[in-house]
Length: 289
Image (cartoon, rainbow, N blue to C red):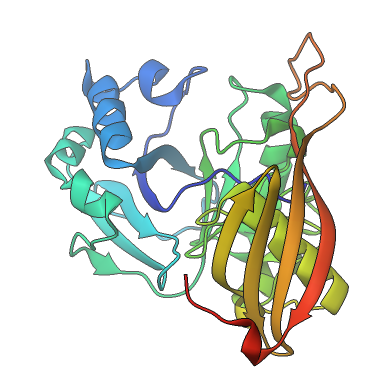
């Protein structure tokens, strides 16, 4: 699963109870053309829009529709929250600014926020595996857990995305939900489930995972990217860690053909990332971009 998190830095989450069609913003029962216009504006601004809905009946009720604006890095991540009178109000947001990582000035949200993909119309696995995961997670974190539309990587359901870091965690079982989430709240990464952090390119995600696995780095801030470069199908990333600086080289290849979603009818290759070297660096190796 390493290196499979969608590459996203800025997010806009909008509460919508559903139902959601295959393409959530296009097919949800939003006011006419609002979904399409939001999708167009978000794409132009480099913002990932998702529809969300509550899981737990025990969650604290809110006035209006909940809206989250988020930045998941690479700078310090953050979450802000607002209540909208209706979904059309989202068209008044400065999405280009959000795409650049500028806070909209909503209420700051401290602590974690969890999204579980349950978008069954997009892929049935997300419903079959995501909904039990969402319910189990909501039992532990009722105010922090939301169902979401498609986040990417259906074949890794149940998919959990932990914010503010945009940490993608895959193949999380409902019996593991609370422990995986508590690890994140405690500043740790579940390496068994880690797909990657969304603010990083996929080869960097794979390099981060390989280094963490070899050296046992399980805290969120244990591995910090200094720089990365790609040459002739090999991506090399340099990281700062509690044990010093390391460079990790990843070969970018095609996987063997496989069914990439639960509704696939044809096996296809996908990008695959293989660690070919992990080396400790010295201070004389240089730094900078």
